[in-house]
Image (cartoon, rainbow, N blue to C red; front, side):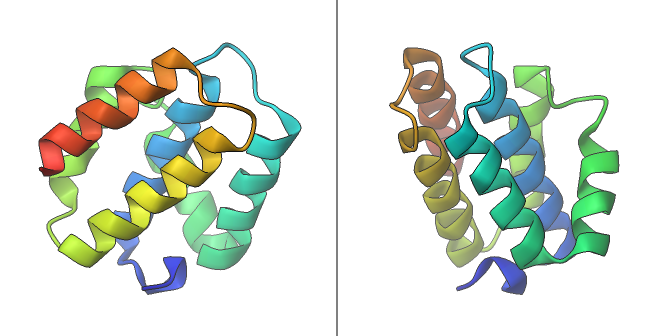
Length: 110
């Protein structure tokens, strides 16, 4: 499955989770910025802007961001989102807060 094949609500989840993930260590690296831009290109400008707007008020709150996971029920979509998040996290060295966030998400989708 490609990112562009995610449903609109799954794209919102991906963008919200990615936004939260890149700020967990206190700063956005060049690698993380590149990955966010890549996601935006792959899902398309309209869907990306819509997802940014939909997650603006929650992406800084881990509990609310993790709650978005309930909007993804398809196993292949969960796999794609987790793959993208792991790619983002590994781009600049995985921080312990990123590991904890990804583990919490994996538990929810377990």
